[in-house]
Image (cartoon, rainbow, N blue to C red):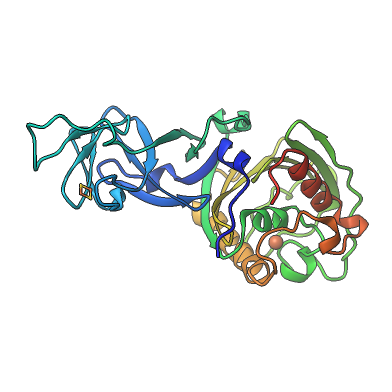
Length: 330
Ligand code: FES
Ligand SMILES: [Fe+2]
């Protein structure tokens, strides 16, 4: 049984696909917060999101096609314009089209190579990422990562330091160094700020992706901003000019299904093929997926008494607290 999401989640921007996945000329169907939606493009470059359901007989409009900048239903070819209004009924072209012949339209925009949708007027802005608008930085799209879990579990996994040595040994952690460094979380508006400094480990042999060759200091600083509800911006630095940025965001498809997008920016190793990072993240996310898909319930329990929290779980505790405060919990 699907339980409803809190209403306020509908008033947030959520990713629904990488821009390149939504091709001009072919409608793209997906789900957001249990709602079937269709995304499509007009010839002037506009991008639109609508309810993926034809008012005539309930057919998925995403199975249709695009004609004269309208979305055409695959069943009887009724045409809907960018405002969601039906503008042509081929079976009866002479009748006045009923005012009710329309499909709801949602907020839709593109940023950072992703398509974003808000089902209601958005209350929270997207994060600003100056590095992504700086020509010295190269961006690589990794994933997407489809998991049978709620977005809250996928996001919380990204905040969890304690699992690195056990789930990603040799890649992100070392079982000989299982302690989690202290970390203080501050919350401003709908953003959690925290950072950790750890002694730098060697690059994994198979994936030489970190800029730690000529270290100023043998440590890695990770500065996180977690933007409620499901976006994390992580900046990695080694004390020099080299920087790496992870932009992770999760699409809440349903209460037990999500799709993560991870865009990685960096200002070094610019000639490396994208596959180095893509292959590395596929390994990491697959290691996490197995664990997170086993968690019950599939959603983060926002009631503190339902799980056991220790000091090193401070980011997760603050995430749960902040989600509750902003009425994004369930
Ligand atoms: S079901 Fe869409 S036009 Fe008939
Ligand atoms: Fe992990």
